[in-house]
Length: 211
Ligand SMILES: [Zn+2]
Image (cartoon, rainbow, N blue to C red; front, side):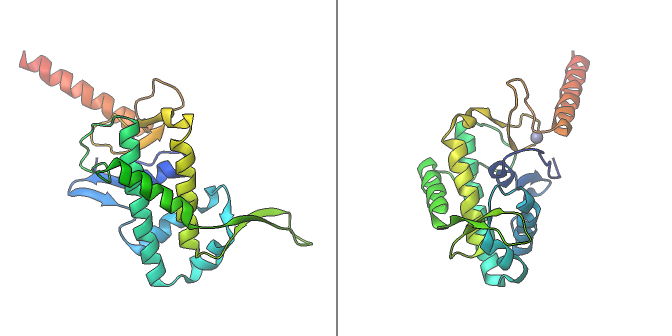
């Protein structure tokens, strides 16, 4: 696969796992640059279950250094999550992307320390004109807060029965993970399902022709 296959309707930690994909030249990474990481955060913003208040201040005027650090933190968290997802799904794919971190326990420790970093607490914002809203307040920059929020969601995902719904896409060349709604689905998206069927059909044609 030479382009990124987006999987709709997934939890955000799954979106983070799928920010790296196989390409003609090896692997592509949506978070490889600071700009890419900012764009990705803006993309997921409407889907954050709770919004850290510092994010609104941080996003428009974050220093290049702090965005670069956030991109790095997100990549490390992503690589830890891909290790744990590979272990949870007994993933043996060779999609050219790798399973993130090689060591299971390092991945667990990294996830837990990311989850513990952003000390934020829920607060109510309710002015005369606006509807009441819950925000997360804390003295951490927006980039740290968003990474920590994603890590906490991932802790809940791996630490609960939800983990059993996690799947590695079976389509050739796809490196995505997804949460399966029912037991029989084997592909992260309809596009991957179609590609897998075409590949199977072609394999069958060539093995019939070889007989
Ligand atoms: Zn796929």
